[in-house]
Image 1 (cartoon, rainbow, N blue to C red):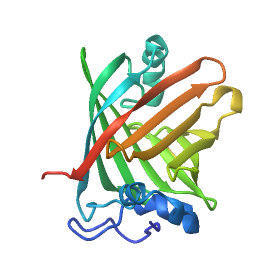
Image 2 (cartoon, rainbow, N blue to C red; image 1 turned 90 degrees about the horizontal axis):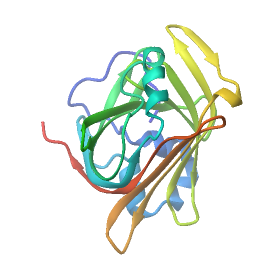
Image 3 (cartoon, rainbow, N blue to C red; image 1 turned 90 degrees about the vertical axis):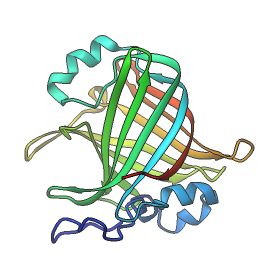
Image 4 (cartoon, one colour; image 1 turned 45 degrees about the vertical axis):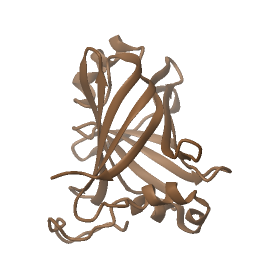
Length: 224
């Protein structure tokens, strides 16, 4: 997806929201598994939204105390405060207009934990350098990661963070590696089960794993 600089998108207009991935990959996108490419291209995302339904084998964070302490600084819908197995989940991917940045692909993830639902939201935007995306996290968008996009030998889409910033209004502060996090996300496809699969892990150099989830899902155009 290319950035827009004019006005916000017209509701119902065809917008290939998922193509932020294909745009970052360039010619390498041809190596994606056909089903991964279909998902990355935003199949069904034409002026609307795509709903993802699945179950995580494991999901959440063991660092509940850290997440509670950090929430006032980074805002809501960034950290989760539970860790469970066999967690049903729902994701809604939609085209979003990000002020000062243009069109992006927004994802709202709902983890259906036993103790209650929790949300994690983010938006993906075209990167500042070839092969990258900007990932703004949480409802407040105060954390931003630079993600390097690549294709694995199995044809899966891999996103690995390289740099991180804190954002407060127009102020953007680069985080040193020791205080940053390393995100590693792989979106793939299981031919035997005929389901999309995902595995994500976010690690801190000081604290270890702060968020992880892995599981499988199916996707479809979201109901109005």
